[in-house]
Image 1 (cartoon, one colour):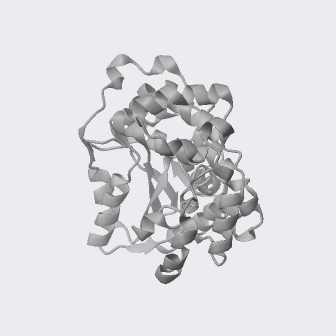
Image 2 (tube, helix red, strand yellow):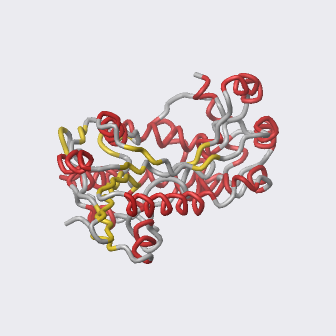
Image 3 (tube, rainbow, N blue to C red):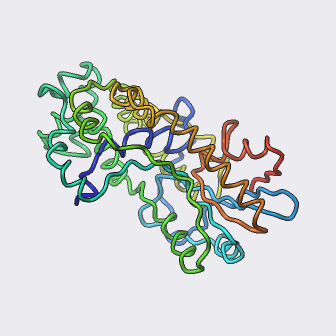
Length: 335
């Protein structure tokens, strides 16, 4: 329980868009979500093929994770299992951590009370534009129900609760079952694990929590774009989930959607309580630089290595693999 209570802000800071989810072009493509595709594929699915990064006879195989996926889908890839059996090193997904020790965490518990609430007792109706609040009402009724307490929470927290409820009702999950399965294989085979995580300093955790509770957040855009995802993108989410489970990366890239992840991340990254803390700056860039260093180290030391990245970190002009290609490595996409 303590782990869940400790700084909820740590789940939202740069750990959202810049650290988080999938590539997001500007607007939804309605016609791509055909009626037949709105039925989620369940049972055992292989997911996408692997990207091959190489120099000479040294190879790094990269697996692309994706979210959300069907709740009842069981992932099983014989290709991944076979390559992991040959690998000397596993590069864990790059993350950013903001933690405090157990006993220090206990002292912070009183500070967490009221952290999700709007400053000065304001309600959602007080802080949101009238048109955005009107859009929230039917979605609240559909996915959350009668919860008066949520009306006093900050829009960014409400958006997270609403989106999670929407995914659940749609038969989707943002959980990490695929990642856990890969972790299990790595542990069973005792493969060397290299972390590319950076630590976000929490030396002044009490002060940070206090500053957060008093600060205003520009999170209306985050809230509005979350509403847009649930208003227009549920069927397309199913299409993308099916596409990933079938290994159809092209289909995922063709389907665009409102980028609420970036908007929510911006609301936190641009807040005063973060701006005043240098150790919390440029998180995405630092994360990427550390992973690239780890990847080059693995390619230099091993004949076969394996890595897992979010799909958004694999494809596109600013992706991690594009950076490796610019350094002279050969990068081959799956068929």
